[in-house]
Image (cartoon, rainbow, N blue to C red; front, side):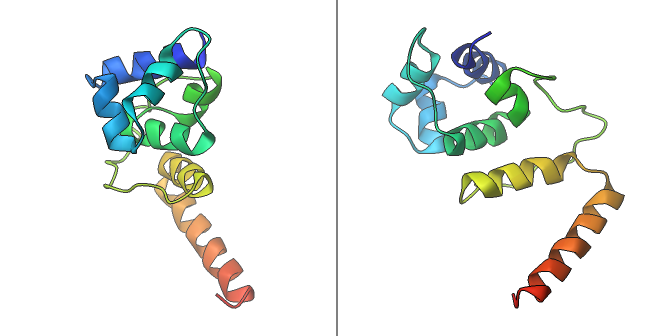
Length: 120
């Protein structure tokens, strides 16, 4: 399955039109039409991050087709309203959301120490 098909499948599962998806991620509707068209353009990583967060699908599945489309409902927490400022922030947030509570705490401790080491 091509990336455009995965975007369309996730968008359909979320009951969103192409125009609504475009509006919510801040692109022109023609971008979504192109992304889903056979042989169309591919979205940037930043747009893929936004699509994955908005449609509540795994970034890896959306970008590569590997793994499951959705998160395990027994594991995933409710997502706060947040739009990633960059592709790296979006990837970090997507990974963080998949971690157990214990691993989240460890990661935050590590990142805090790393930031303190660099002077903020």
